[in-house]
Amino acid sequence: MAGQVWGTNSLGGYMYSLNLSKQLRQAVQPLTKFRQFCDVKDATQQGKNKGDTFNWNVYSDVATQGSTLTENVAMPESNFNITQGSLTITEYGNSVPFSEKLDNLSEHSVKEVINKVLKNDAKKAFDSAAHAQFDATPLTVTPTGGNSATAVTLETVGASTIINAIALGKDHIKAISDIMKERNIPTYSNDDYYCIAHPSTFRGFKNDLEAIHQYVDAGFQKIMNGEIGRYEGMRFIEQTNIAKEGWSGGSNQAYFFGEDTVAEAIACPEEVRGKIPTDYGRSKGIAWYYLGGFGLVHADAVQARIIKWDSLS
Image: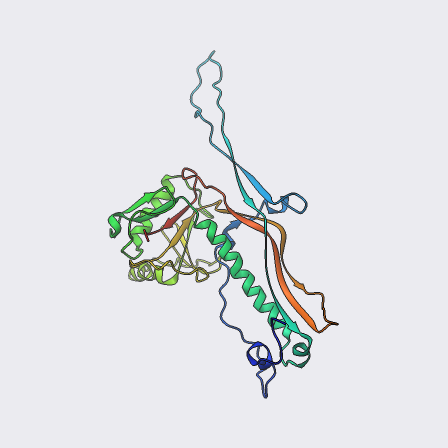
């Protein structure tokens, strides 16, 4: 059988060896970073037996703004547009089979180890799915000319046309924050936007701010996984789940966003399942399973809530 077996050390034999440490150790695992910012408030409406498409409505402002009224003149009338976004519900999962012999002879609990390994696998799968939707935003920014230390250029076609040749700095963040405010992108919470990037992408920025002692507010409580501080109305999250894009410049991708980013529709929440034993109970297994999907809420540039710090490949 494929999976964990007693007869191969690397696939199970090492789970019982002389004087094996009782401490259960695993490879380092990151927490989810992108998924925590997905909107799941509407997910329970999908449920089972309702098809594989999840839709949501997006309502525009009224076409004509209200103003002063004149006596004996009829009240003006206007309207608004409704557009729809959608995502497809699909299955996610992974499993690890194991033999009864391995389960019976191992010092460590095979089921406990596999449960933890699969839970970590599920976290990374969900973050990858959520990130793919963040990355689909039509809004991108790059340093003006590719190397400006202060100005940025906003593009609205989903991909940058400028090679980014400079590290992300505090003046770039000020400029991006101004763009988000002037586009009326709603803040995520407490009048703050968020930004997610690799630790090395933030390195030069953090070094700049250490000199002026503005990076972390006194008494500021970190409330999101990976949160490292706040500056210019922006909170910063470090992530390592998603690989760097390998730019030739001195930076890498970062995502700035406000409220209403990515929808997550859940038909069946993630769960760990046991395989019904076969071969007279000698063949066992454990799996994680999830039925749901992720979708970018605002795919049009006018209403987009996510801005990617990007580069022409």
